Image (cartoon, rainbow, N blue to C red; front, side, top):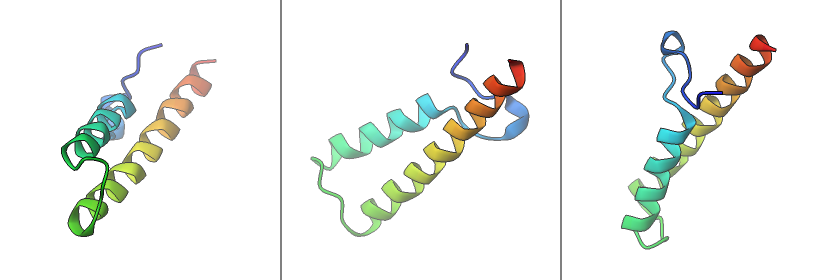
Length: 62
């Protein structure tokens, strides 16, 4: 299975979003406040949507 969601969904792959989350946490030393915390929450929500979309693709293929 490819970790990439279909382009037609307009959703970035969860792997890509996860890397953005990791980069953010590393850049901030693990401490998230204010705008950084808001960015993290948006990325986390985006990751949840991406993983759900990827699961849907797998379920449809099965």
